[in-house]
Image 1 (cartoon, rainbow, N blue to C red):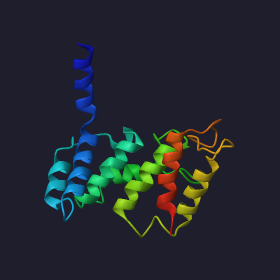
Image 2: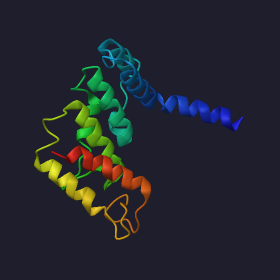
Image 3: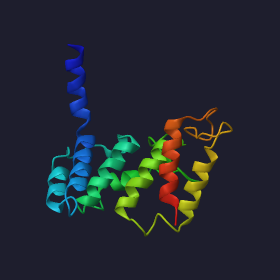
Length: 169
């Protein structure tokens, strides 16, 4: 019974990821990429009137990738994701949090889908984001969740590499 209720909750909360993962799978399996009509169909099945600014940054990032495929670049999720950027570099997981590596990696990855070469590469924001990621490099040789972390781990090291990959020229 506990598994049943948990799966119901996962289904309700997982719509964002379901659409995103289906879109990425379809994009990788189709020779010409994800057809715009399919991305738009997925986009239409997202809940309307959602409080996008309350979603965690990884979910917003998934929506931005889907918005890019559906050519809905000027969307509410995109504006909410851009607003998550912290002064001095990095992205926040929630509107009132400090920046962290997972949010930074997810946001920069998604914004790279949106604007592959324009804004993310040669800008002061990119330099600040790269500096934030480097500040998360701990003395143990791994990356921590934020510069305030005491130790690094392999999961956050992966996020750091993803974020740094979006910062390269």
